[in-house]
Each structure stands twice: as structure tokens, then as C-alpha cells.
Amino acid sequence: MGDHSCILKLENIKKSFSGVPVLEGVNIELHTGTVHALVGENGAGKSTLMKIISGLHAPDAGRIWYKGAEISDLTPQKSLELGISMIHQELNPEPYMTIAENIFLGREPCVGPGGKFVHFKKMYQDTQNILTKMDIAYDPHTTMGELSLAGKQLIEIAKAISRNASVVIMDEPTSALTDDEVAILFRQIEDLKAKNVAVIYITHKMDEIFALADDITVLRDGVMIESAPRESFTMESLINQMVGREIKDVFPKFEVPIGETVFEVRGLTSKGVFENISFSLRKGEILGLSGLVGAGRTEVSRAIFGLDKFDTGEIFMNGKPLVIRNTRNAIAAGIAYVPEDRKEIGLVLCRPIRENVSLAALEQIESGGFLNLEKEKSRVRQMVERLLIKISSAENVVSSLSGGNQQKVVLAKWLMRDLQLLILDEPTRGIDVGAKAEIHRMMCELAGKGLAILMISSELPEILGMSDRVLVMHEGKITGELSRSEATQEKIMKYAVMNEGYRE
Image (tube, rainbow, N blue to C red; front, top):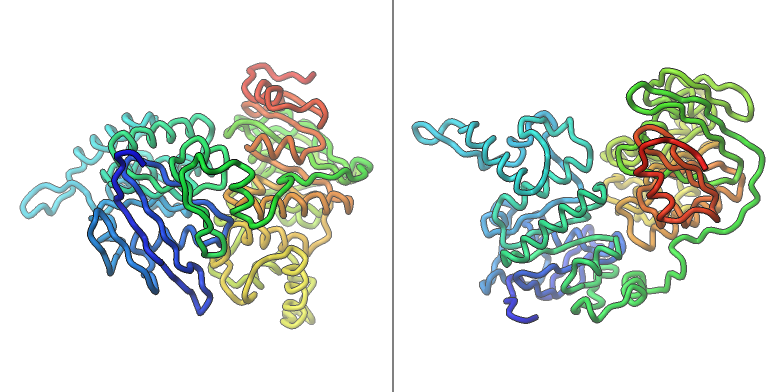
């Protein structure tokens, strides 16, 4: 470990929820000036462990030392005061407050008698200094609600760093960031290391683990499998330890017969957003839609699904014109949409798993105008078994599930219906390597049954691994089309950054 002293030590940490063990005797040592990657499949206990460190959960057993002193009865406030700052995967900024108000929430600079008044000028100036230092080109007066998911993520990172913490916990920090923004984050992490800050880094992205980590701890089903310097691991050994089995192929694509054209758009245009989008999709085909964040891919899919209006263009299903004025029209035509942000628009987080799965197919489970609860339970049970969704009860709220299982619930909701076209926007974002392979396998099975799939992904290995054909967008236009055999990372990136739209 060199001269890096131990700043945080966890010994034999145990935690159960409703009698189900989530952590079983975990030991970790964190050293100053290092990045400690915490890896494992969803449900392995990573986030629970971090919530214990940040005072959100109390451990059932075990001891915690911080800077050499044993600490107990941690609360979020006490954790922050000690110098432990956590950037949560689930971002919860105040959308109607400005960037500055979010960064300084609860610790605003004050003036006046008894410090009763917020010193707004200082707060905005301090925020500007933080953003400038981090290369983030936002106005501190912008409200959080105006920012993209990636923008919110960067502000959360700025907020954590601005607290001058000794330990910064990052839970999936790059899941919504572009390559440029990831580069900014990596620079910040190097700065933190140089200042002797310890970083705990949770990610599913293997390349990030090997690029950043000094040490790696692997959790599986709440048990610590291995904790060692990064040099002790290879990509293969790390995946094996995470999942307890070898994943030969995270992209288990198999050839399926591709049938006749089932879906087509011609000249789809939304002024200032995307223009002249034309493509077709055949039965059993997975069409990958690639491009940099902001290229207009999600906007095209939202227009097809009736979430956003478009100005001109035509849509055809099985050769017949389709009028899509709203989502009801799209759903009736057999179109399903799994959104990029499953928590915001894919799920009703506070409701049971059962209700979320049956939500898009209520007409199939009603009798005489009333829901047939037994029929609903039976259909939901079938979907849970078919998609291998790990649940203890369908009556639990869907927010209690891991990211991979939540994504499967969104898929299950649509598979309750007869579909012609499935639109998947970032289908495996924030999902562990085991669940990723399962979702990819499911996509192949659905394609094998003749379903047409439009897959938007920012992960080039996923685009190359899963697509039969690739369309690339840049600034609202389709700039390239490549067959599976032609597609390479270099060709896709060439089309993704080009200025003049053309097709080879």
C-alpha cells in the first residue's frame, strides 16, 4: 500500500432486511490517496454497505473505525461532519432550486445579525469557482430541473467534492455521462487522490475498474469474495468472482431468421431536434441506434412512441400508414418503449411489483369492468418466472429491487402485450454484468420470435455485440448505416462526430 495510511476500516459488517441477510461479515480497509473499487452484481450488497458508511443504515453487527477511532451511531449528518461524502446512484436534486442552492443546501453561507440571512452573492460566487475548477460550463443560476441526467450527475459530484471530504463514495458515477464528462470526472478523481482523499468507487464498467482502481473488493450475495490490489485481478478472474460462474459472452447474440419489413419511418422531422429520419426494421432484426449523447436518438424514439410531437414525416406498420398522436395510439399499434430513465418514466416506484408488471395490460385481466386479482397474480407470476426476476414477493414495492430486476419489470410490463416493435433506450445502463447478459439473451429470444427491436445504446460494445444493423446519428441527422459485418468502433465514431450527413 506504500505510505497510504488506513482511513476507514470495516470489520465483520452484517445487515439483514426483513430477516433476509444482505451483508454477511464484510471486511474492508480503505487507504488515503487511493481509489478502492467495490464491485459485484446488483443485489450483492454494495449500496447497502455504502449506506452504512454514510449513516443511512445502521449495521446489525460489526465495527467501523475512521481515522483510527472506532465510530458508532452514525447518522448522515455525523458522517458528513466526519468528512464522508456520498454521491448516490439515485439522484435526488431539488429540481426547482438553482445549481448553487443545491450545492450549498443545508450549509448556505450566512450574514447579518445571528447569521439569519443567506449570503447569496457569496454562494453564487463560490459555486462559480467550484464549477470553473471542475471544467463544468454551467451557470450557477440554472435550475436543476433544466439539466440533463448527465448534468445533474456532474453537479452531484461537484457538491461532494466541494465539501472537502476525506472519503468520497461514488455509486455508478458515469452511468449517464458522455466520454468528455467521464474524462472530467477521472481528472477530478486524480486531483482527489493527490490531496490524499480516499475514493470508494462502485461501477459495473470493467474498463473503469482497471483504469482507476488501486484496490478492488468483490462482493457476491452479501459475502466478501476477495479484496486485493488491482494487479491481482484479470478481467476474466474479476467477472468470475463477481458472478460465481464464467460469462463466456456478455453479448450472447445468435442468428435468427430476419423476415419482412414490419416498421418504417420516412422523413421524420422535429424542427431543431432531428430532421429527415428514415429507416425500416424487419421482423427478428435488432437495429442499433448509435451516436453521442445529444445526437437526438432518444428524441426520435419518444416521437415514434407518441411522447413528443413531430412536425413532418410518416410512420408505417406492416406497410400501412400509422397515425401516432399519443402513446395510446403507439401502444395500440403494438409499439413498446423501455425508457432510458426507468425510475422517472418506466416504473411507478412506490407501487408493488405486481401492479407495475400488469400496468400496460389491464384490459387483459379485467372481468366486467373490474380487475380480476387472481388472473393478475397468475399472469404476473408467469412473467416473473419467464424473465427470471429475483423477488421475494410480487407485493413488495418495485423500488426495493436492484437495477437489473427493475429493468426486467419494465420489460415484463410490455411483454404482457402482443408487440410488433420494442424500443429499448439504454437497455443495460447501470446494470451488472450478469443481468446484462440475461437482458441480451432475452433480446435475442424475442427477436427469434419475430419481434423487431430498436436499441439505443451509448456503449459501443453493446451496439457491436447485439445489432444486426447499425444507424449512427449526429446532431439530429442519420450520418451512417452499417451492416453487422461492416460495423467497427472506428467507423461508428467517425459517423458520430462528423459534420455532413451522408451514407456510404
